[in-house]
Image (cartoon, rainbow, N blue to C red; front, top):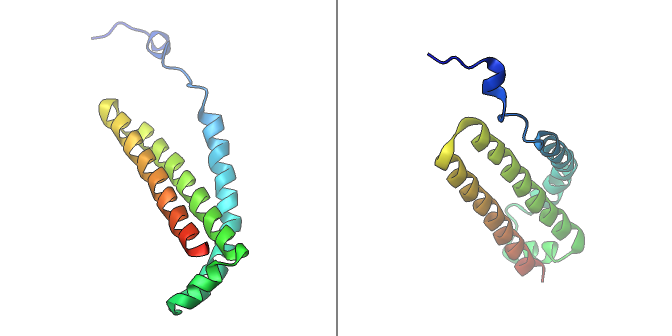
Length: 123
């Protein structure tokens, strides 16, 4: 039986003062993805099923390459922030720390691979 009051249990476990910043970060990336997704679908969609040389020529143009690059970067950073929030909300201790590190590395790695592939195609 614990004789601690609710106030005593709450002291030291207050706000980390980063919730608002993360919320605005997610809101901004959500709006960016809301704008980028139709552009990406209309630039990437017509290339599905096309021959390899046609796709290379198409993504060598600046607009489709920039839209694809922005979609990759914003999408994976949005993913990283969202999954980090899930790890923080539903896990504790070492599992939380390892999960955050792994998903952060996965996000940055996937974004780097996507940008490398896009640069390889566009250049």
